[in-house]
Image (cartoon, rainbow, N blue to C red; front, side, top):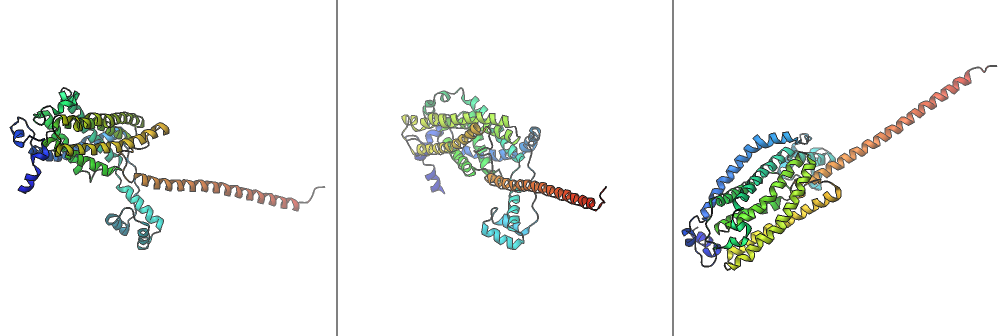
Length: 400
């Protein structure tokens, strides 16, 4: 363990050439790696605070805004199908469906419908998704407001070259220390809750984003990349609270408000993530920093994490552009291409749509058939009455 610690904390990995850990320790208000431990209890505190917030604030707010949950059809008891669903797969293959048909005594169609309704029961309700979005909205809004207030009067907010003046021997102000620890604790809480949160289409990308952010915050604090790190956090928070607010109104079916907020979010996201982030943040860490010190391992690692985040920004920007295309040419935002819907929502919706379409088509054909039968019946009745009248008239004596 001692050998591992010596290898991990070698100053060549974390600090520029010519700077030692002793130099950092002698500096007043210097960042120390052990400070990061406070982020773990903060993460647990965020989880507890989130539970209380969702129960006392988010749920009543969802009712006030008119969030409605879809009624899910309950499946009929089928122990064999339930065991397969919970232990093996929620989406059985065709060969597995055939085997389940023999075991359960149901038809293939009944087995497929059972699994579809069973999956729908596990899909999160609009209220649950609203609670998650509202929690993140409150945090990102407070974080962005507090971060902007703490940075707007600093020199490096206006001139990113100031991030490297006397680096890394830069004291850390208390407000920026807590800004770091709170953000780090929040992302730890998101990572710990990922198994119980709504699983979205960009689930894997979200995991990569959380892990990259945690590594980025942790490493940048130890290597005293705190000035540039605060700018990275501020850029991300500037658009995140707009996205979460758009989601909240989407779940409440306030379509016009949701569309307006999404347009604002799209503009802010594309500007901050595709223009400001690479031109102001990545440029200063890749180019301007080398004017102050020679590249070292921490330099490459930090910039690699920033490039991972930029790759995710490009991925999400592509999804957003798809939504803008739908908004301009279809006239409305049907769904959140970025992370609003669960991974299997489209499939379930298509299945339900086909089933409803088949039922509607059958109802239309039934109406037509009923109408034709009625016409035929009416015609037969009239013909019978006419023939009976003709027979009666033929039997009556003709008048002279």
